[in-house]
Amino acid sequence: AQSVTQPDIHITVSEGASLELRCNYSYGATPYLFWYVQSPGQGLQLLLKYFSGDTLVQGIKGFEAEFKRSQSSFNLRKPSVHWSDAAEYFCAVGPFGNEKLTFGTGTRLTIIP
Amino acid sequence: NAGVTQTPKFQVLKTGQSMTLQCAQDMNHNSMYWYRQDPGMGLRLIYYSASEGTTDKGEVPNGYNVSRLNKREFSLRLESAAPSQTSVYFCASSEALKAWGNNQPQHFGDGTRLSIL
Image 1 (spheres, rainbow over the protein chains, first blue to last red):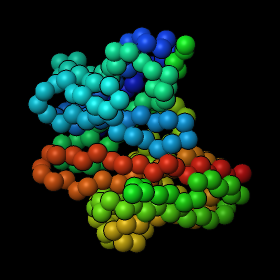
Image 2: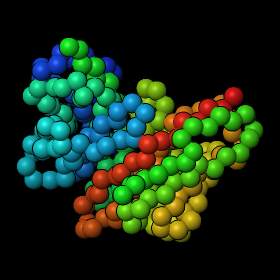
Image 3: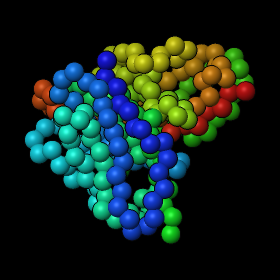
Image 4: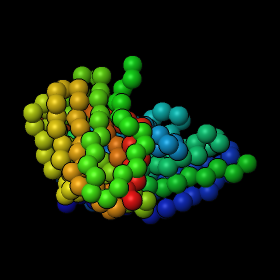
């Protein structure tokens, strides 16, 4: 069965600093990977997705993620965070050819001035 | 363009009451989903509908029923609400797979916050 682990429950970063959110997945074949962001009181918004090809994926709001098959990871990065990036971030994995997603438990990001 | 619309946004029920959560999407998507979100547990799939007239159980279907009324609408029903069903419920939709392996991203509503006393 597929699974997703987000090891960091809560991360605090200074505004302007770089950010890396970790995501590890478990799946026996080619995974389909997604990062979503959830602002307070809102639904989830897609940041980026990886299906195949270039392992460095660019998303919206200046985010990027790198797929590393050898490490079963799909970490989310941003060079310089803004106060508006404070939110909860979810990594999700879907099996090949199937729309059912498994979500991680989320990482809450706090930005300090 | 409203995307995915959920009603109501908030609801308080007493144990044993019934309730239907409504979801509608205007993106002409084939697939629709119901999730629940609980602290520290992420989102868990309750039910899934790949197309009008079809539904499939997800990870946590017990205590829930669903109806895919038409292509736009997918409702979630709690027949006899229990405190363990206190949660935030999200509806999502996605396009059908356009090609083998080309998973489509899901689009989410803003959620229904449900409290059961």
